[in-house]
Length: 180
Image 1 (cartoon, rainbow, N blue to C red):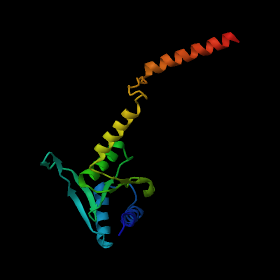
Image 2: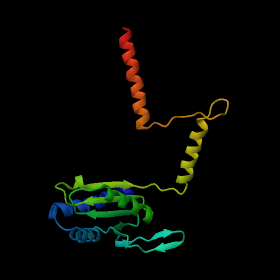
Image 3: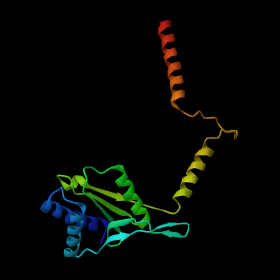
């Protein structure tokens, strides 16, 4: 089964629950119901799966738990809140990174129409991301060299330099209008 088919099944189960129960209940109620729907639909899942944090060969059990890990590849985080904040998105991306999963669904049941409360995340983590970024940065540094090999001096654009530039521009415009 493809990831898109699996997320389609998960979202379908969540929509059925939301149509039956509506918004305004506690997150744990929706979690129980979604577990029941997964069982009825024969969708393999793990509930409240602990995710360890590894730092330099030290495995830390910090209490990170996924609401659901469906078919060992889709992280499902459930909320019943007024609005999804940026911290919830950050937590989802952290869960994807720590669990090494590629797909995540953040489902907020406290909305009138559930499709407005569903966000899908895709994480493409590569070990060489940092090396690629360094390579791109090095390429940019090399491309900033003059023909004779000396480095060009680039002024950093800050608000103060912007004000100075605008001041010069306004002075030029005044001089042009005075000349006419």
